Length: 357
Image (cartoon, rainbow, N blue to C red; front, side, top):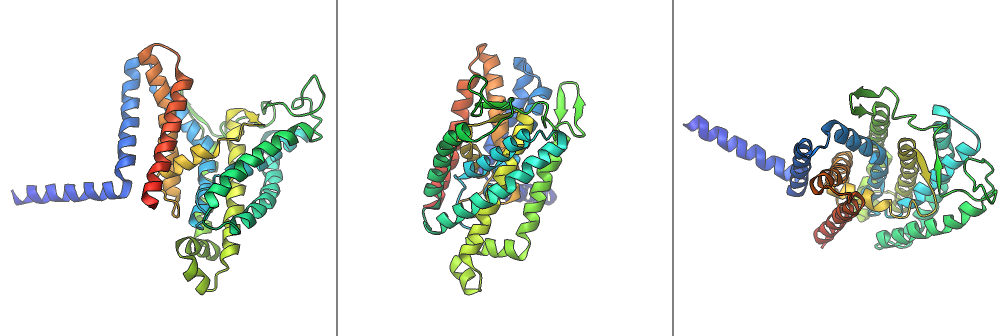
């Protein structure tokens, strides 16, 4: 009898510890996602295809969500200016195609061209945020939106000449959507890909995301990364310890911008297209919502938050329209996708506002 009571107490203790670690919101969302996977076969949705799509979306968006970590850790808040990094990646990818680079070399060239642009833009972005301390997220939103608007003009004026990218009837200005097929389409996704029937595991893309996560984790363990975390936790204490607070904040913004540039390249090689003009306008919101759903706060984030949040957000976004469409026997996928994605974004942001208060 005593052993039974002891086991029950131990089980309750383990359960409470798990709840404290994961949090009820993630547990509830996880249960809902699991129930969607369980219900899928009964409404004619293949689990293998749905799981494959979820994993594909997870890999596509993983590095973009990871870009939130440096700025959060440095106390700069959530990076609503992510479109600035995305624009750097778009410039690198279009320049790579303009040069005719293909395959893994073309993808590497796109990264090599994107990173210097991201460093320059990130440095200027960091200098701006250092002058508006306390209002970083609001200013970052304006920076992201205004940079997208500015580039709408630039995409029409930049002197690209590759016929696969420019408008056919004018001979100048880039198209709204540019295909990377024939250049570096699925260069990561098809690398060591595992396929069983309708299930496809993009091994190469997952390895790349894992590499980026490992590099950020490793960076956070260095002297600079520790100083950055100290600045985010207590800037006055960090300053008293001899840390240059403004410099650490700039480093975090530059790193976040570079990750945004690399992240959009991973997204493009999987998606198959480069989306210009207003394409990057709202791309920061899903990344912000993902890391918040993963358990991050406005001044603390980890790799674990990135992985959990991205999987939950993309899983719900993938499964909900498929299951509900088959239940209702009608095509409302886009409407449902908008409702679900914006609903999760709203929940994530309002929950963190309440915690901050």
